[in-house]
Image (cartoon, rainbow, N blue to C red):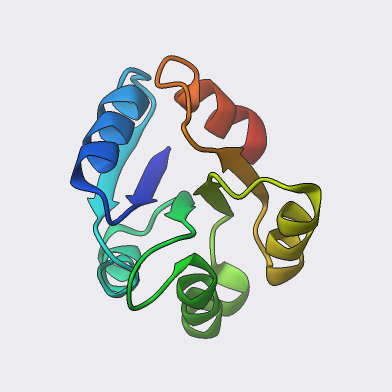
Length: 120
């Protein structure tokens, strides 16, 4: 499974990459911004996008909208990774088109399993 992980925090990107790569079935690409995510999505062709909500310039919802506009029905599942996990916020993210929300901070030991379970 090809996973694109998008987060503006370099340390979090690296922890996510390492934890996802513990699963031998995952190939991981990372991006540090929404703009980088748009480029990476075209080049990398991910099976799932894990997207931080709070980023400068292009936040997660703005990045998701741009990905939807560019890829339409071919856009792979997008899962937000965020500390904003109130029920109302999760519902809003899903209404925007996110498959699910993984709470931050995530557990590095279970992140790959969570992603696999959410993507099916």
